[in-house]
Image 1 (tube, helix red, strand yellow):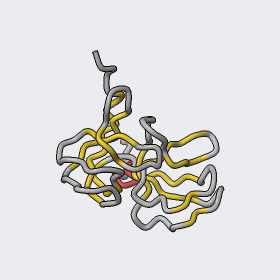
Image 2: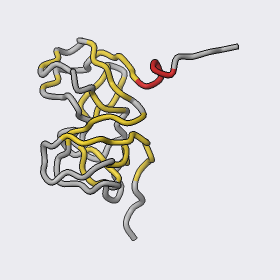
Image 3: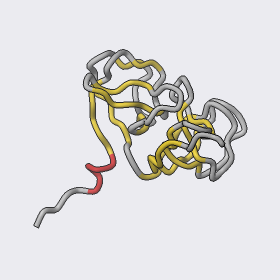
Length: 130
């Protein structure tokens, strides 16, 4: 029988594709060179852990949470239950048309910069309006 550890499926250790500053609790993407902060509306692979160093050099290892419930920094006010997508800086904002839903807000935030719980779902792109 093949038995896998559930914990190993939740986190992924990868090198930073380029230097990352203040990336903890931010959405990231994964490419052939490693992890980068996500940009607006892209299909983020996960979120950098809260213990991520403030300055990460290119090639240095980072740990990304790729599923389940974790913390994320918001780029604007959100309401509990909102579908969340990445803004241009890798922060969580309410997902709009043609943006990738990385997960759902488990609590509300009243302003940018706050840290909230998110359920990572990777639910695909919001359909185009109309």
